[in-house]
Figure 1 (tube, rainbow, N blue to C red):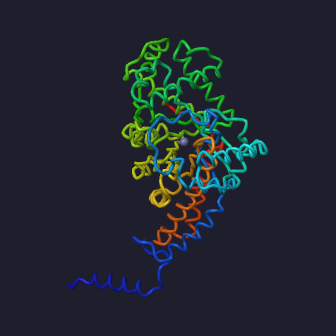
Figure 2 (cartoon, rainbow, N blue to C red):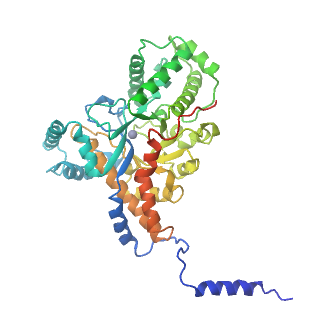
Figure 3 (cartoon, protein in one colour):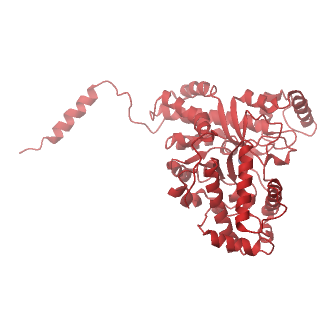
Length: 453
Ligand SMILES: [Zn+2]
């Protein structure tokens, strides 16, 4: 008998061809002619979306608590150098800056204009910057929250790395000039935390040390704390082993009163404390932000800071109730990073990337991420003060504008390529710029829960 299956297939194909064009054709590899028009249209809508900025460092350049870090000597990526002409445009847009550079003759104009506004506006000063840029809420990543930030607009992500460095850190400081800048700041912060908890020195027992950590977390949470923040990648590998409490306790008992632990012993202690912090953050309903990209300083180890080092933590079912936010999306491993967001409790933050990269490059990063797990990406500006004249204000401007443009560009291409509809694109834009983070950091998000060991 003759095989007529091919005929049935052909008939079906012809029937489909005769029908009107399907509503959702297969996506194409290139955008169509309408991409520029779509970009303009989407940008207009995207500019109206109120932003939830989940990671930035608001504050004035002379405020040492604006970050737990300080910049070591070294190179800066082109776009975040203080002579980037885009920043002149920012000062002009926000403050009416009349010059086209920040030369020693011109910059004082900006310093005095800002001072005048600060005096006039007080606690409303940073609010007015947020209002100009369409930012509704900010999670401020700072050492402490100052009186000049409005509590109704600024939540707090506080640093916890200092708890990892309670012993003699001479060997780590000698490693390079970056650590010579960073580690003394961690030691200083630990001394402050001890004072805050009413202690004059490290507790005698490891139990006492863990209680001290918990006490600080509870105090910070009561002061608008919504997240803990790790900068561990600047100091060590993001790969964490799983030592037992007695193993970590034995290191604490040997070194809390003096003496320098071996690298292996220090790591055992830190790995345990890192996991303890995850458990306590979860119990106290705090999100966990982790720096996962390349960092400042010429000695930042890309290998240690590689986001994939966190895989064993992120895919560990024990940590399912912990809300992880992977800051800066793992750059330059952003292509790998997105696959970690498969887990329900893992989110990717795009902050810094939109400052390091120009919108044409950042658009491609967003396009890749949003076409895989669009509901898992959150916006952050990583705004920070450059110097006395050029402040966090200008970097908010650059971050917000770059992200809105790159987002419109990424979505315009995806819509034009028939990946999804314009309606869906707008929904994704709301999720990225606001809704996903607003849910993530809601102080009431999810009931506090305890992790099993
Ligand atoms: Zn940051």
